[in-house]
Amino acid sequence: MPFELFIGLRYLKAKRKATFISIITIISTAGVTLGVMALIVVLAVMTGFEEDLKEKILGTNAHIVVIRNGAPMEDYRSVIEKLKTFKGVQAATPFIYNQVMLSSGKNVSGVVLRGIDVATDRQVTRLSKSVVEGSIDGLDPKMGKGSDTTPGLMVGKELAKHLNLSLGDKINVISPMGNITPLGMMPRMKPFKVTGIFNTGMFEYDSTLAYVSIGQAQRFFDLGDTVTGIQLKVEDVYHTGELARSINRDMGGDFTHVTGCR
Image (cartoon, rainbow, N blue to C red; front, side, top):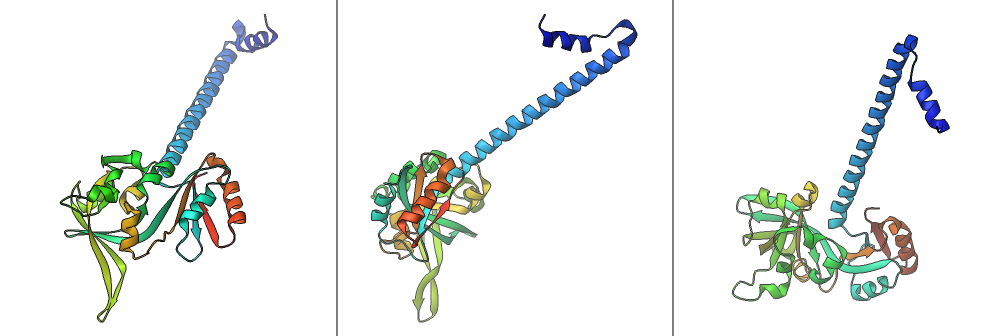
C-alpha cells in the first residue's frame, strides 16, 4: 500500500470507541471539498466573463489607436503604410470620430458618429460580424447608386429601439458645428438611410454609436481629405503597450496613441 494512502486511511478510519471523531473527519472533508469546488466554479465563471467582455470590447475597438496631437491627420495614407512596417502590426484602417445628434420624427438622441473605411475596417475590428440586420456593405458609397442616393448609416440595436428605427428608415444627422451665416452659427444637417443594425452585446456601445462611410463623414464634417486617426490590429494584444511605445518613439512627438483592451 502506498505510504500516502496509508496515512490518509489511518486518519479517516476510526476505531469503535472513536466513532464521533470519524464523523467530524467526514464532515470536515466534505466541507473542504465543497469549498474547493465552489472556488473552482467561481474562477471558471469569472474567467469566462472576462474573456467574453474582452471579446465584446475588442469587437468594437481596435487594439491601438494612433492620432495626431491637436489636429486632423492629413497624410494618413503614408502614415498607414509606415505603421504597417512595425513588427506585430497586422492591419490598419483610418477613422473619423465626432459627436452628432440623430433626429427621427419626435425622437432625438446624441451619439458618437464614426466614419470608417468599409474595406479595411473588416481587417481591424469585428464590427461586420456584429451586424444583426442589414449589412456593413450598405455604408459603401457604391451601394447608394440607383434611384435612392441617400447615404447609408448603421446604428446599434438599443439606439434603433430608442429612435424607433428599422432598415430603410430615413434619419437626420445634425452637427452643432455648422456653417456661419448672417444669423449666426447654423447647425449642419443631412439625411441618411438606415442600412444596418448591429448588436455588440454592450449597452453603452449599442446605444451611443453610429457608423457611416469615411467619405460621407469627411463631406459632412467638411474635413477634406483628412481623418481623426488610424486604428491598428496587432498580433498579440497583451503586448500593445510595448508596441505603442515603439510607435511613439519612431513616429515622433507629433503622434500619440490610445491602447485598447490588454
